[in-house]
Length: 423
Ligand code: HGY
Ligand code: MN
Ligand code: MN
Image 1 (spheres, helix red, strand yellow):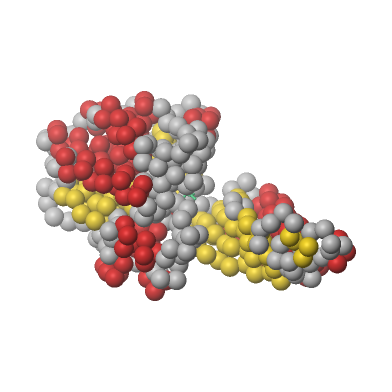
Image 2: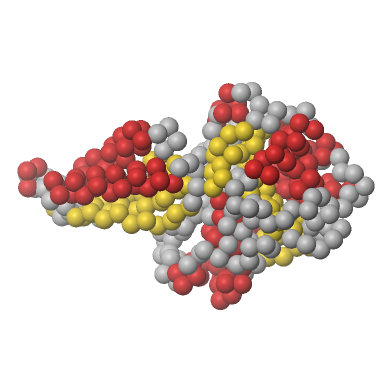
């Protein structure tokens, strides 16, 4: 039975996207759905019910990742596909859910058409991709590829002081067994993730979909600058040891150093906190996050070292103490050439241009690349916006992406994919 990717049910995937938007809706039109919260649980439970409706074999691993499996004609390494359902604070409704629901639609359409893929295809919803609650992004896929430091479950806490271990338990996951979530290389033949582009390249080329060539590497750091708390009115300017202007210098230095590096180098300060945090108190310390990325790992690391040197110079000159701690690293990843060419052939068969582009955003695919070859499909973002309530992909583009994903999965599952040489 041949599979017709054009016959995916576009209305269903768009309705499901709209349905998920209710879980974590904020008063400002966005979505806040953090890792291991009731909101992520509600969205994941909805997807689990849809997987069961579609006749998939549904399971959850000890880390809270959800899987739905469509059996193949023969046993063998499954083709994995999916994304995540958690969000950034007041984020959009497409970053993550588009990849999970597109993957579910692809395999549900195969089943409804009576088309059985050669290899099994497994849909995954990874827990906690964004790193918005705990200081570790790509968390669910870190458990899958065995790189999460499982001895940190009790020590790693969110900003309310809840440990990851407690959050896993409250979520209904099994912190005592999280090691079992790790799978060996070879368990999967390949991984394909569909994702909203989160930038404006496809829109600028007036294209609905694109094929990703590689994923930027990311280093997330926490800078702490310590001075001396004093009275905001009584303490003369020349006697202060104030970490706030030092933090301001560091923010500007990070921006300048990234601009001086390369257009693919990106540096962002997304969080800054003074303590004790009162208008009439010179802060004792200022803490801020630094997110530094690049498609080239060495260039990214060189930028990190220049920021580290800038912090040391600022603190020395101002008589302050400073430290810069790496909290999470995600390696730059190249998508596998075999998958890129398969996607290009699938695109052409659907009358789509096989446009290729890199990803400045990181994705669970970067982790799964440690287990098998990975590929990604991007779908156009209106205005290139993402990580905000304005994030949007049209129903027509959702359909175009889902068709391409479905055709790609069908082709990958139908070929004898050996363990490919590293790209
Ligand atoms: O940060 C990222 O690039 C992704 O959205 N977690
Ligand atoms: Mn994402
Ligand atoms: Mn994101």
